[in-house]
Image 1: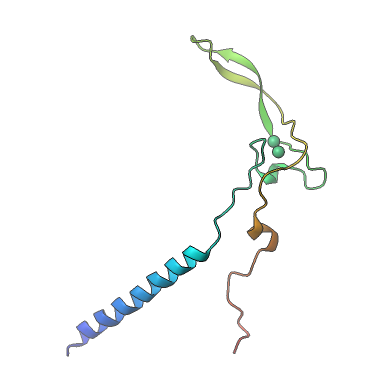
Image 2: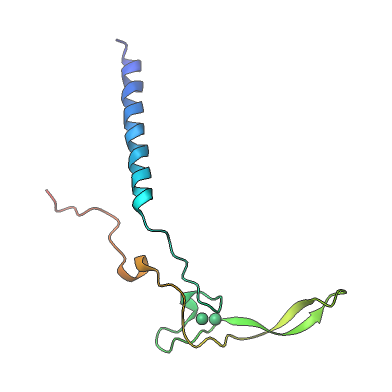
Length: 104
Ligand SMILES: [Zn+2]
Ligand SMILES: [Zn+2]
């Protein structure tokens, strides 16, 4: 048997295992949650202590196009008082990405 076909065979088996492993992991992995508040701003835009959003949002229209559609808005501070969006669990617990090295 020539060594190249052995290598190809071994490579195919390893590749299949790798794909199965990745797909299995992918299947079990929880969906990434987008931490976006009801006000449309991300969780990082909200003060951790007071909960108030310090993002900007569209206020009164400033300019209109020929169809009377607003094209520019006055930017006003977001009125959101508290973050109400989903909490990203992976940010709360931050699990270790590497397997424990002391399992010998
Ligand atoms: Zn908010
Ligand atoms: Zn906001």
